[in-house]
Image (cartoon, rainbow, N blue to C red; front, side, top):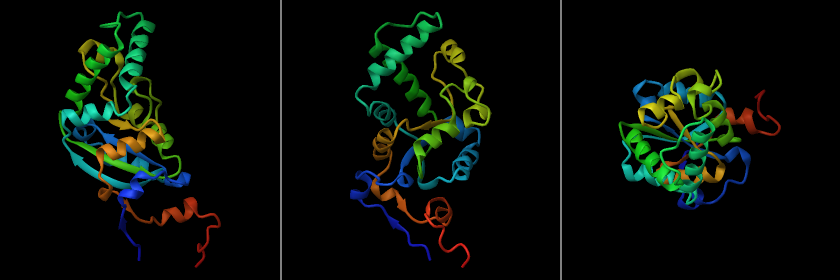
Length: 216
């Protein structure tokens, strides 16, 4: 019988010692829910061998969304600078040359988008979980995402359309950008009691060093 136990407060705060214990946060955005792609998105992560250890549906508040995107104190400046550069590289005049003003506009658009309906918040665990999820999800702009990725297969959106419409990109999924970022985001969206520590039979194949017990 598989034993199931809830993760303690101490467990959620300490770093995971082995690559197979890496965790990442995924948010299926309102457009993903409305287009009935929740099952397909989850299926793709599961088929790669990742383990779902927390899952819930909610309608986030504006404060939750703003808090999520500003967990990194440098996010406003760095994102603003990247956005301005992206405009200039395309020969387009940015709405302002002030990085903080740019991200103020971006945060307003993100909050409007992410609070427009229910989202699915999930935590995935497994070897190189952050990199695997980002690879399966695809690049931020669906138009330039590779065929075979979630965004490349299911979304038509582009930066050209978002600029014309004055909104943020609709790309179905948020995925943590690094293990450190993932741990910050997990604590933002989940309490320790919501994470479930359990064993999957598939982990015997994925991680057991000697594959013991296969012929029992």
